[in-house]
Amino acid sequence: ERAVDQAIEVVGRARSDMLTHTLIDFLMGETDGVPKDPNYIFRLYMALGNYPQAAKTAIIIARQEQELGNYRVAHQILLDTHRELSLQKIRVPQELAHSLMLLHSYVLVKVLVKLGDHL
Image (tube, rainbow, N blue to C red; front, side, top):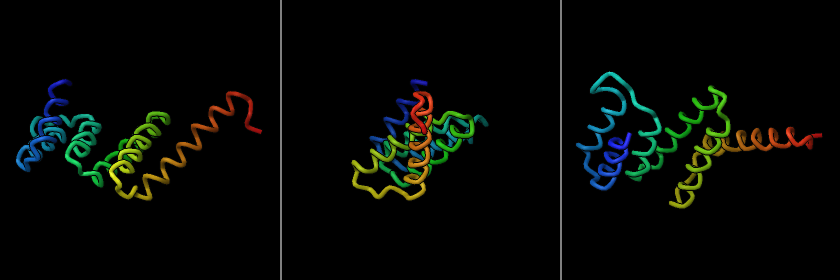
């Protein structure tokens, strides 16, 4: 939804606690009973510079993607988060690094198996 993207951008720039809480309530489904895609919450935390909370959210989203069998998507979420945290010179949580390492290994092995180069 374009409107949600714009709201995240505005709240990220405004840095207003009231706007932040209002948007989080909306994204969590507090206002209409319909929780929104967790990626929006992740992007909001990134826009606000709340990297520790963004990392926690990324881990949760990646775990959900793994449960659905979307290993490449989970890998990409964690990789992007790892890169952003590193760029901001923020310590990468051990759980995020460990999950990324496991998913990275899985993705590499899957490619090697397809190529017949796994023995």
